[in-house]
Image (cartoon, rainbow, N blue to C red; front, side):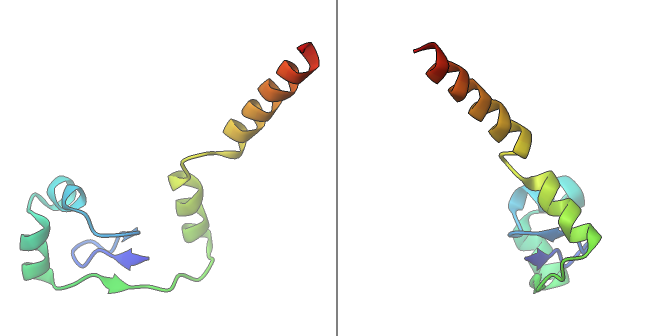
Length: 77
């Protein structure tokens, strides 16, 4: 994980979108002004676990619903 050099937010990669929306400057301007993002090896503390849960694309509920739908289709056929 990387830490934004301007605000310290943890992310997978520093993006132009983050720099524009949070700091009103391009990624290139942000890097020139604040330096390169710091690589952080995260300890599994509460903040990191929350970030992982919030950024998950497929949640456990999504998986469970898909599994239930699949089981109901198998029972019908």
